[in-house]
Each structure stands twice: as C-alpha cells, then as structure tokens.
Length: 399
Image (cartoon, rainbow, N blue to C red; front, side, top):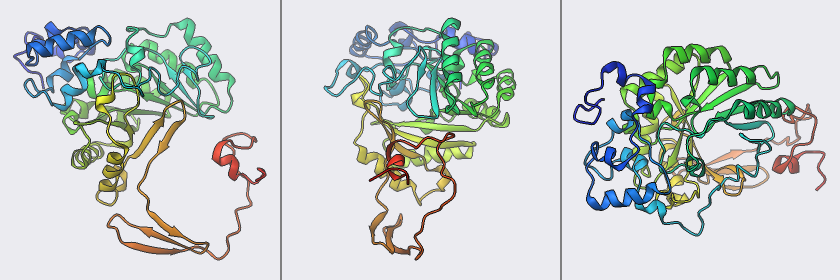
C-alpha cells in the first residue's frame, strides 16, 4: 500500500515493514501532513489550532490508505484534526464513562463485578479524533511503570470474583514484547482470572506490529482474546488482513468494535459491507458503539435512531454472525446498554406477538407450565445475591 510520492519515498521495504520504524516516523506536525495530503491554507491554520489542545499521530501505513485529495475520506476524517474538535458542546465531558471515578488504583477501572479494565499505557499508534479517552492522549505518551503495575496486579489478585481482565490503554500493543509478556504472565498466574482480553487498534493502523514472534508469545497465555477497531471497509487492506490472520491462526479470536461516526460509517450499506468483509476474514463484529460524549467529538455523533436503523438493515439481511450489538456506553459510568428495534409487538400470559425483519407478524405460544427452574442459581462465581435487575428478579429478593 506504500505510496512512493510521500515523505517516506526513500524508505526501504525492511524499514516500512518494521513496526518500530512506523512508530518513529508518524505524522505529528502540519508540515509533515502537508507532504501527504492536500491542505488549504485555512485547513493548515485550523489544524495548528487543534494541535494546541489535542495531539496528532498518524502512522505511515494508515496515512498510505488515506486519500490525498478527498477531505471527506473516511480514513482522513478519523486521523486528521478538524476545527470542530475545539468547539465544545454543553453535554461534552472530559471523562464521560467515569473511568477515573471507578479507579481504585492507578491503571485499574473496576465497574462490572467479574471484569476489570487494566490500562497499561497512554500511547497509541494513531490518535483517533473520536477517541473516548482523549483526556489521556493530552497527557502525552506514558507507559504504566512497573511500580504501578504491581499494585494493579495485587488489586486483581485480591478480587476473587474477577474472572476477565481487559488489557487496554492507549494501545497495549505499542509496548515491546518483553513488557507486554510480563503483564500477561502476571495475570495468567492469578488462578481466578479465566480469560485475558486485549483491546487494540494496531491491526488496523499498524499491522506491521503483528509479527510472528508476537503471536508466538501471545499463544503462551491462552485463553486470550483480542478486540480491534475497524470503522470502515477501506481499512480492510491486505496488511490488516494478514495481521488478523496471524492472530486467528495463533488461536486468538479476533472481535471488532466499531464506533458509529457521522459521515464515515452512518450508512446501512457501508456498515453491511464492513461487517461482511470482517467475517470473511475471521473477524467477528462484536459491538457498534454510539459515539461517546467525549469533549470535542460532537461533530462525529449521530442520532441513536441511526444505529437502530443500521441494525434493522443487518438483522435478517446478513448472517447473524455478522450482526454486532448496538450499544451506548452510558454516560456517568452506567456501563454498556444494548439498543435493539422492538421485535416484541405485544404479549399476554400465554402468547407473544413478534415482528420479523420483513415486518411480518408471528405468534409464539408460551408453555402451559410456567413453573421456574428449581436448580442451583448462577451467582457469578460466588454465593452472593446478584445486584441490579438480576437482583430484583432473584427469588431471595422481597418485592
């Protein structure tokens, strides 16, 4: 995909395919960006204003799949600053998901009973303009020090209900193999941690990082999952396909979490092309996120109804394997809330009237014996009564 008429024209194939070279040669200034895409004088001035608040970083690979002339190129819109980023709305928040409030020790966000988010670095290969953790990018490229890793590991070790740890950041795959392996090794040594997940956009923006040696190392810490972040079909290029293939061949299931972005993928046709392209390459569409209320991202947000419309155009019109769940990560730390069209039209105590994807109505008859299962109740790995709505439905709860 390398373009020979750019600032990297003299790079050798060996350099271009080296992930460290890619990180070192990222676009971070307007002067560099001008050599890759066409910019008006006004655009240059506006980008300079944005960079006073939010940094820019674009890998040579990601820049190479960006149109040099289309200002509405979906790759360019995700990576190049826009003056709208410094026009804040009343609903904008620095930390919309309240991750810092749910952080008992540095690097840890603990919101769900059995899952923990472990932020190991602030560094990303590309600073996405729609990022929900823009507040972290403003601090610069910091890696969680070993002295902070230990308290985080100890916290996880002390919470016996935690069975799932998501290693994220920033992007954990910007860490060298040795440091990443140290973190994985420490987590895998905790008996009650059943699965480890990695959240990374590296397969999309820096696929050269997914080396054979990295995959060989990751294989040692199964069960290991990885969720990445394709937002548009144009991002599915041979290099990214090869990276995801290596991960899948190493036994690492690859999921995808897209963000619904105005003018980029807020179309049923674009999203259908994206999810089908992903499944074809062994990448499972997992979530479509409604864009968070992060400061400076208002121009990317769509109406919630647009996400539901897209879901309607996927369900029944492509295989269920290709249909992600549309969610809002609720502002204020409420967690992920799934949003679906209403397929239950009406119900009584004996029948449910359902609508299918074509709009046709069907009746399902409930069983005559409505007695509940009297076996052991699942309580997320312990004997405590569950909380939330599950707690309200629990037989021990008085109503």
